[in-house]
Length: 239
Image (cartoon, rainbow, N blue to C red):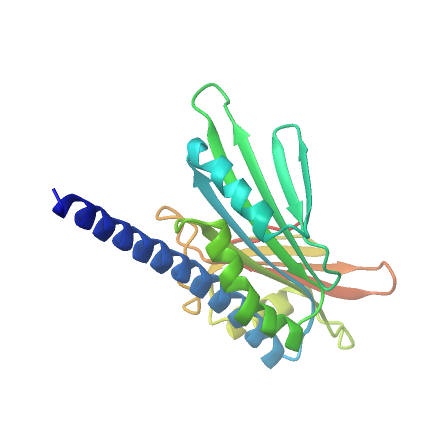
């Protein structure tokens, strides 16, 4: 009889190790992706005006209540709200904005619960690096259970003094990311392209061999300029 508690404790330890390993993988993916995006753009002397990491995981409904209780204790200084079946928590930091959203749906079938986390920043500086190195790992560990999917995006502006056409910028950026275009859309003032780059590991799916998207836009508002968004494996912000 004494062996049973021992065996159960072993299973508990194994489960904890698996959970930690899964979360470390999520952090490593998100950290690598966003830093790689930023590094390539900085090497091209391109101004970064915003960045974001988005993570999402499906959770069993019976585990949601315990997760919410834990998060409300750990993030007691965040602003919590509940509306139309969505539980939202928002950090009160001005430089880096964080948001957690927990949504349950029961459309014509069993209840599906999604846990989502998003962090955004307007600048890429030492505070950004500090957050990614020190704060993000703990946040991922607290929120997810090891099966989250991550998406990373960066917004920026290109020095438009030369007045190059959008296809020129597209070609230059694809080359910088060592990427091969899979498909794309071109208009007079807008270009969108999906590509495959060896710099990123995660693909959209087994059926879609792409792990990077790029959007470029020329605008006349507040002076002519070229703005862009690049994301892996896809862009998750409006562009």
